[in-house]
Amino acid sequence: MQHCPQCFAEYREGFVECSDCRVPLVSGPPPEATEAPDPNLELAPAFECYDPVTLAWAESMLREAGIPFFHRTEAVECGAGLGYATPFTRAQRCLLVPRDRAPEARELLESAAEVADGPPEETSGA
Image (cartoon, rainbow, N blue to C red; front, side, top):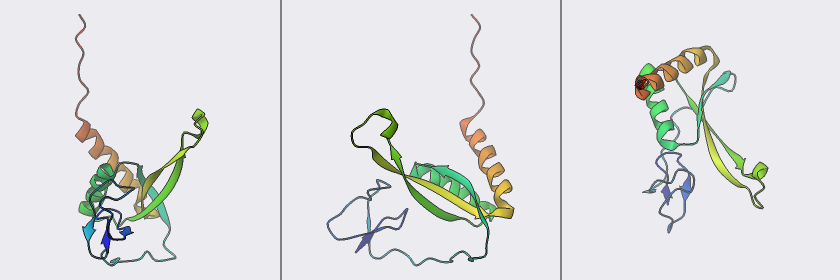
């Protein structure tokens, strides 16, 4: 048995790459979930993206801030409105946090993204 180290999807022998995350698979079963969300816990979306690298960055920011998070992945149809005969799907990943921590999580991720992007480049007025 093999699994994806990012989304923990399981694969049979013979597969080498996760079809969603596009990363090499690792041997063995995926790790056990450390904690399931309380069914009474109200969750709110804090971050959504398609890119697994960006998702890992957001996870690390939340983990460092001590904000618990949970994953939700949805298949999103692409190309249907563009006239393609066969639309394709992409996996949209969403990080959910406890509703009372959502504003804090969003602010943290937005401010970190601004720092990562750096100051806007100045254009010369020639």
